[in-house]
Image 1: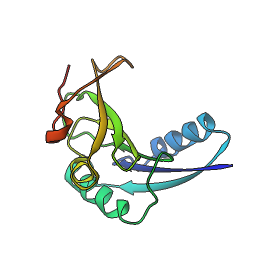
Image 2: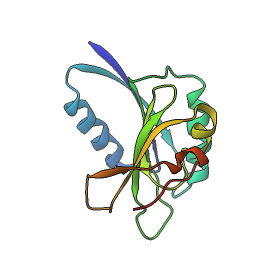
Image 3: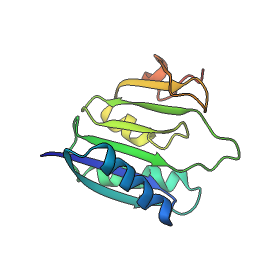
Length: 136
């Protein structure tokens, strides 16, 4: 059984967090999942940014590790990003800057942005080397 590490950075303290974990467990039935819940104060991206950096010093990295951020301090919903760090670790979340310290520490191998909030199609962007991404 393959071990997956999923770091959930969120301000959800209610049933929503458990629903997310249940869905991921159902989507990956052949895997044993180690969940790391990083709970921030409501709408505090900076807190999530710092917690992500702290846990990154303790967890294994690579293709079986994913950072999933669900913290949005904005009235409007920002575009989604996903990609891979140069150490092989994956990340997905809103384009709020929550992964800036991880980008700085490990570098970005590739990053994609959503065309709009209601679609799952993504486009590769080359601006990641500056820790900014182009919203399309």
